[in-house]
Image (cartoon, rainbow, N blue to C red; front, side, top):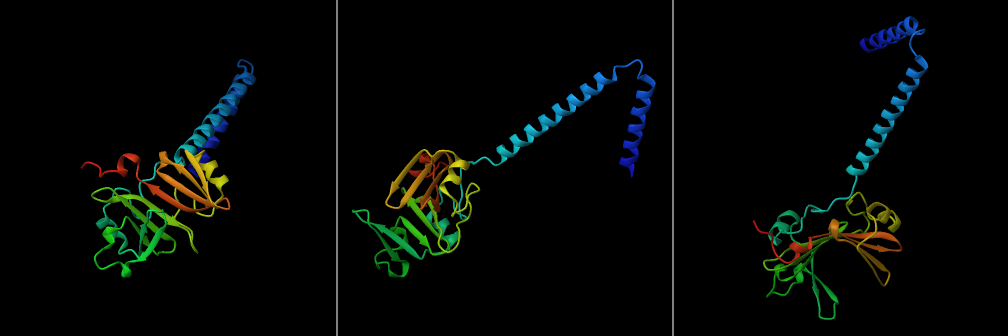
Length: 215
């Protein structure tokens, strides 16, 4: 009610001003200037809003995934995730053996292994390195269910969609039916098969992979 009355008053005032000054003022020039100003303001606002949306949605370095962060200790992982279902042992020939935690040799514990696997759906895998050990990579393999999104992308999207969103990767490699894209600036590693994303990983930055940060 109040806004409508105000606008009506403004319109009436403009009409009266035009009536009293139409013979003395160059109203066509004023109208053209006013219209140009409106177009300029609208264009500036549009460009600003588009720029803000792009800035807001820009990919940023990832520091956490599935509740875990690179740099965490094994104890912190146990506290957050519980005991792993499997551990991985990589042999000298790079062949990885999957060992159920209830089948670990009696003279060893889960802390003797640098890779843990949690049989959630989707499956979460955690890599450790260094001394004392810290998390260096958190991977998610999508099975029946999609992995949690990362930088706005979910497993199942096409490679084309990923590159359109993130840009060209720092490195890309193909081994067998799998293609791997690396984005070190985002702490990301992505795996594809048949041009579809099926596994994602958040990695520690290079400086944190080898040692625990000070403090």
